[in-house]
Amino acid sequence: MDFYFDFLSPYGYFASLSVESVAKRHGRTVTWRPMLLGVSVLKVMGLKPLLLTPLKGDYILRDVARTASRLGLSIGRELSSPPVSSLVPARAVHWVAMNHVEHTGPLVHALYAAIWRDGLDLQTPEQLRHLQLPPGLDVDELVLATASKEAAELLRAEVDASLSIGIFGSPTFVVDGEPFWGFDRLDHVDEWLKSLQPATNRSPAL
Amino acid sequence: MDFYFDFLSPYGYFASLSVESVAKRHGRTVTWRPMLLGVSVLKVMGLKPLLLTPLKGDYILRDVARTASRLGLSIGRELSSPPVSSLVPARAVHWVAMNHVEHTGPLVHALYAAIWRDGLDLQTPEQLRHLQLPPGLDVDELVLATASKEAAELLRAEVDASLSIGIFGSPTFVVDGEPFWGFDRLDHVDEWLKSLQPATNRSPAL
Image (cartoon, rainbow over all chains, first blue to last red; front, side, top):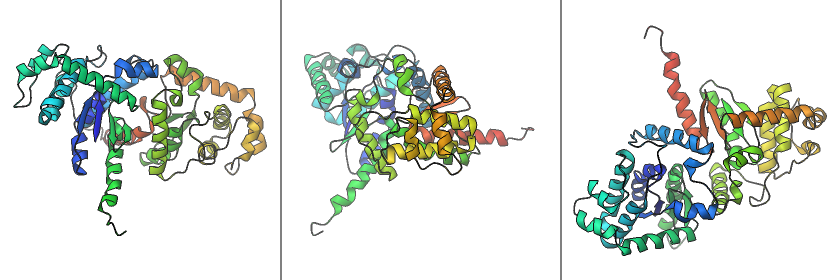
């Protein structure tokens, strides 16, 4: 299943911690698809960023804090501070997904923990040196690659592709073409996958 | 607990069907607070109506259909048709809440079922005659009252009040000042109310 998210989205962080267990329960794997909501989605939709939307912004701060507390997570970042810059982390993930795919999931977790649990800013590739990287991923190679034209182009293509299939929010899960938007829809994804199972077990004679 | 909703919101309809059972479980009652999102909230927020927002609108149609199906509800209204006019139903409810409070909940259910289950349009007070009204509520009185200045003023005051406390979406539940936005947050309301209970049972000696 495809997991679309923006590193600036705390709900994407929450979802990143449980999406694999939902997928695994149904024999699926997760394809990690970081994108950039700010680049084009908000422009197409004619919206302001969530936290800058009057009324809603204040509520979201409250809901994020409450949701983190329900999940037993601590947030090491002032929620009302300027948005996380998600360009560098997203480029790093797309380059790794293309070149060392086995490290993709662990890298997403390392990046999300650094940003939301530890409150790090990752605005330049050099700052990736502050991460606890997955064993086997070379930090010098990662820093160089994240600054490369290849990484930039991979991300640009991904942002265009996600927009073309109508992804507008983080997180969004896509299961066999069916989109589910929002951390609170992960239960529905679970149910949806469960409902598909009888079909695959169905004998051809029926 | 306060239950804020707009009759044009199908998620408000879904929530209206279970909000009382959640409240009752914790010895609470529901105060029904229909408001009008379109009047001022969207203007303050600088947003377009949900279904007219590019990308999101299409998704919402899908999510509403999927959610109705999970709940075993049929929707007797074309989701992509023009928005429900919620002025008349909201005025009717506020007038009844002020004058025959015991009929408020049953009237909300009758209105929501008429609009979303049966697909009725309630654009004029006269159209309230097509409802299955709660026994004991006089339809002639209701039609006259809904057209009255009193009903209009009650609703206007409610819209102003909901905006002043930051309500921006339907449904929103407010429990002892704590706001929860969205049908999918009713579980959180349930948990929240449960978490308050040890405190009320605590002996003064502790």
